[in-house]
Length: 118
Image (cartoon, rainbow, N blue to C red; front, side, top):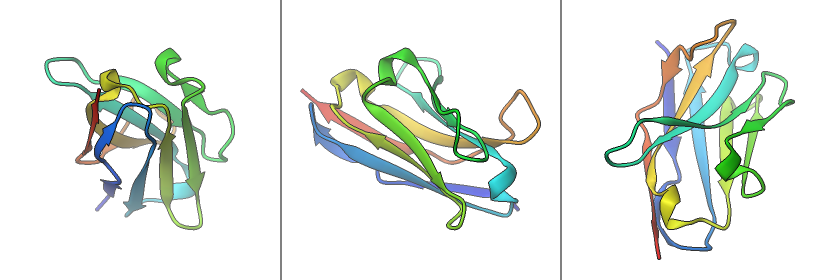
């Protein structure tokens, strides 16, 4: 059974940093592309960042470029999202997801809340 478990969310002030973690189990982690998504209240879920199986080719939504960094540790089956210079508009539930040889993400975590106060 595949499980993706996010952690690291919380309440911070604008300008602060947070690091989200996503621990994966039940899958061959190192072959999966991993991604982070977020969903703000009343909005559609949106893509935030993605990293390939090797850790190369990270890709970000424009609003995250220069502020967020996605990384992974295949030895720990964990993907991270380091977020800095947080803004109130970054407030959302953040989800990690995994996909292998697919355009769509196959597996999703339950999400972790990030709240940025102004």
